[in-house]
Image (cartoon, rainbow, N blue to C red; front, side, top):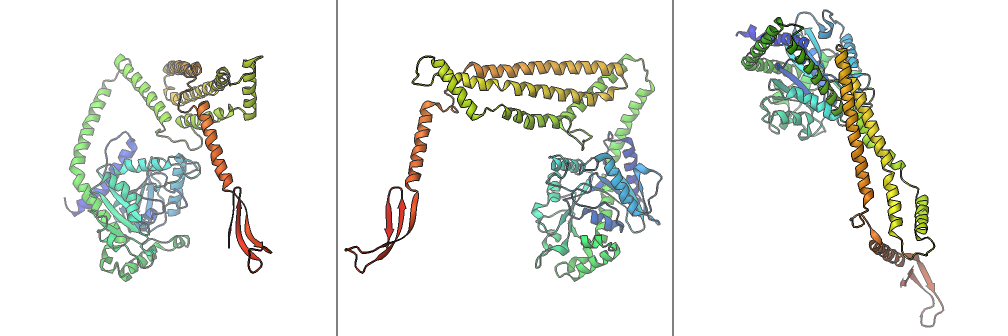
Length: 552
């Protein structure tokens, strides 16, 4: 394969990428690509914009990239962009490209800061770019913002892992130079899936923002945390430059001057900067495609044979075939079961960003509503003391009791235990209601088969109600077990002897504290006493509850 053939490798993979995107997520072919990974505000967007020489990516605070962006850069004589979801429409205004990315993101994730694993495919033709394909992934975050779910950090990590765990994926780990490299989230994730550093390319940004007297020379020389493909340093525009619409070409010239003038980077200036990074990524991706092409071709052929066999089966398809109808029935029911489980476990393909649903609502019932119900059952201390008083007197009757009767204690305790029944039964009812609501959300997918939908709904609802009845009986049994026998020998039970011991200990402690308590301190003048020579004298005195001390 000649140089011309090598140059066509990346566009060829791009066409395969578009074709597979139209097929859907069911295709298991993993194309060679470069995934851009980094924390929030690490400079990922600035690096990509420097490649293109245009401002076209959304910017703002918090998570800005909320869907993976498959960015295909193709060298051409004219400059424009195309989206896979807007086939045939050319975007010559890069502000429109930014707006379209925001609209398409909002369409799936809503107006808050939710995320979605469904990628946006953007192809940019320009005479200023080299053939390159990159996947810009959401920045790693730690704290949920707005209506984001509490596990937003893990959702983003899972999404990133789905891309970088594939052997055909190169990892572009972007880390700012003004942070500790050992704590880099991007490099940590890359190391988890690429422990030898064979697929990872390090990019160090914000070299111009390091503290005076410090530099990243050891990192860029690949001596601190070595990677097989090394590190490349870049200097992006500052936020002030971006707000001031500073030209990217001028920024690239300043970047070149920075490396040439800096004493720590001068000797490797020709291997630093955005143009060199783009050139190296083009070479890395081309070589990576060439190296993985044989295995990819074999995998593609096996997939094609499998699809041909499936297509051959459909040629003999008969709607009245009982075996096929049974298979379709089982397939639909299995899909329903998987969707129901995903909604409960929280791993569904579509994440709701407006309200809680499925397992999240059940979680709220257990951890918020149920504890609140239990709290409402707590008795007022004054009322409880009154009940104890009446119970003791009623049990003693006409007699005057010397000791507190056990029956009074058991009566009060059992009355408190019985109060648990109400909240527990209410908890079961609420969870059952949520399970049935979740079922209704899933069963709409069977609307093409009304009879199957009705029968499935009846069967599942009946099973939920049956399990509810069993759960109710079990909970009531547990409460009845507690009511049947009050174990006063349990370690949590204080008892009279222990109570007296605790009371005595507290009294001793309070007595010691009272004895040591200072009543008054200050200067004391003693005058006209015969044994004192020289008249009056002053003493510093300390008066406690048990003693008087003085110092001359």
